[in-house]
Length: 111
Image (cartoon, rainbow, N blue to C red):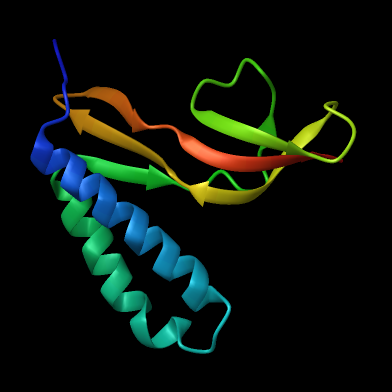
């Protein structure tokens, strides 16, 4: 099965990136609770379309991980943990098949 993103899917990917960025910014304010229901609804709509995203913050990173592109912070490249997520991992789910349509862009640091 060939799962290839359409231009509509690419527009939705851009929208997900904006939602992800807004959610990160809102988490730093007191407004999170007032709009969390709206975010849950938007996520459900995108999930119904087969799109989902994952924030890998706090997860381990090594060179074998293919779902993220990382910039390494600090002097060591051992025991890396993702400390910041610029763009989330976005997946397209169709008929039981999953394809990463956007690799996460992250910053990893040695712990």
